[in-house]
Length: 124
Image 1 (cartoon, one colour):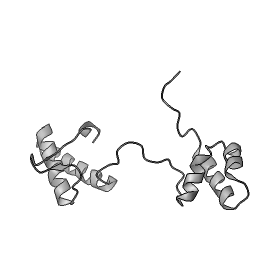
Image 2 (cartoon, rainbow, N blue to C red):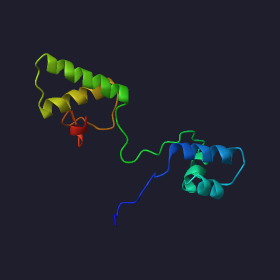
Image 3 (cartoon, rainbow, N blue to C red):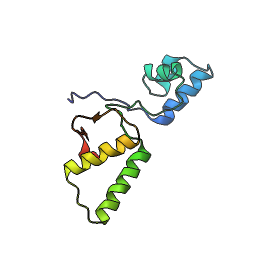
């Protein structure tokens, strides 16, 4: 038996339908959760927070850069690679620090070393 809990086994269309029926007051939370096979607390929380999204909450750390910023930075790295500038890990961290400084992102910046502390740089 797996020790990892099973989360979000429901389908998005079922969650949307359950929320729609609860908002129209056709059924209550418990009945909607049983009929549409979704957990009872999830549609209740989404209704309370006025969340229209049927997607799940973000798990783990939130990204520092937006998707557009990541794409922009990735394109810059590819351009440098095309011009035959090889990057070491130290160079990569310095570039991210400069990029974060230009975009006024202060969450992970360490001014002492003037580089960004990266734990998951391989995923970039």
